[in-house]
Length: 206
Length: 206
Image (tube, rainbow over all chains, first blue to last red; front, side):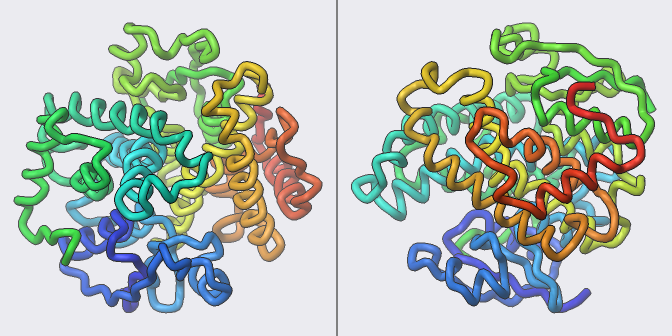
């Protein structure tokens, strides 16, 4: 495989997904750090050379650039034990990864970013008006996960897949900023401990 | 393959993605219609039997249920000419599908739903406060696509893939509700005509 370089902000759960996937697969990844709060990913050089969408993470593979955290995890893990071989199970794994980007991340990660890193007093009026709706939608996403984990250990099949990695990233730090309380979701809490116990696991701060 | 049943609202672009994918692959799909404006997907029976997340589309495969439009398209198209065989190209296709769910659909599809089907006067105060931000973000998504199509005919590789299908669904009806004007994105308009000319293409109203 070509040399792997992760363009990232280490505080971002989306970036951590890729580092955790690479660690579980034993793949070395070089890291280039950006500060999203300082606008490092909106510079003309970043937009021209790394990602025209102005976002991290971007996984660089040799000279090619792959944005979108879940697509990068897919690139690394395809054909490994982190992706189920069965056609329905594989699609069901992607189902949870799309759920993560649509129902989970825009609520749970965005509230963490707004309340923990930016600070509520610094939000725009339009952002502040969305806090309540994002909290409700984030709780609904966590409740759906809690119902899953009441019945099963992993989102798909009988072991950890990319679906668990994608949802672990922002779930395990959902309390940052104070919006969400994981004690309300005991089955999610138990799953968090299962993920942490997987051989090769690395924490977000690694 | 087991019998395919699509649980859908025919006005939804997310549902249309699955019908277009199935049509291009020559796969017959039975359709069960719901009216999302009447809350058909939030009934206890729907939540218990079809999708606990209360959303359509859901692709039913025999007795199994697969939510999330892009995951359903993946299930149908895996191994076909709609999915590139190359590892990077396949991940790049998924990149655009995650972009669609994160940067495109929540802005372009949501504004179409709010302004075309619900009506601006009927929006909640919190929804109304988001119209401007969603318009800006939707324009940014269309601009990114326009830059792509200035340089290439299809999002990935040299022919139509699931990435084009995913982004075609809400792009070609982006003018519904009046928020977006496709004349501002001429390369997107040309790509829309290329998609329509693909053998086996079916319109959203089919």
